[in-house]
Image 1 (cartoon, rainbow, N blue to C red):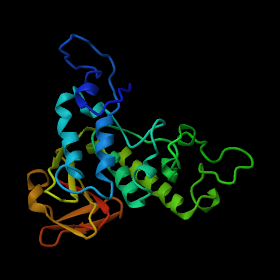
Image 2 (tube, one colour; image 1 turned 30 degrees about the vertical axis):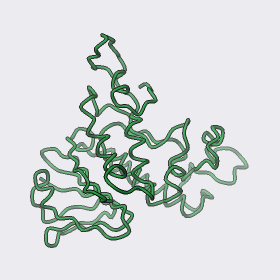
Image 3 (cartoon, rainbow, N blue to C red; image 1 turned 120 degrees about the vertical axis):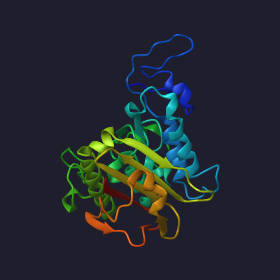
Length: 266
């Protein structure tokens, strides 16, 4: 795995194995870090993003550039790293947007990389690299908190514990989902000024429908728009709720400032 810190996908793709470069350069790096997608994802989750040129339109365009990569599924997708502010700070300490970012990394194509401490909402106060790389709490005698534990005995606050449990559930679900690892990806261009974005992973057996709603109101989606991928399902399984969902009037409802991951049999 290698890093080319550029937000231009044509430059990043130059370094991935299998790329036919005009200058004849041959790379043997199977995986490179997807900085263009990281920037687009963080930008889409900012509170002030509006219009066609920002928000989910840029996220849509970032994935639409996958044609320049020889192997998009082997890109490393991430929300932050040791050289930039932590994702919780980048999304303005908004726990809803943090959850959406984690869910997006779990569902989109590529190999997710999660920086240590993300699961407990670490957030550098000033962008200083020393603070970005602060010690993980726990593991040494005398530590007041121990984030190697999950629950009240860790000494973490309730928000941090909820974040731990959320991310644990999410990544363990992803671990066993073949459709996420090897399935195709279809996403839908957001409407002008829309704060709703839909991405679907699918194979012959099932589809995973991922919908983000960043608006202040509940979103109601007509499933006919996605029939080319999911058909006409009458029900699905909500991954994070762990419960079945029946569709009324062929509609999917997504709460404000939230997301849904639905498993649909094909």
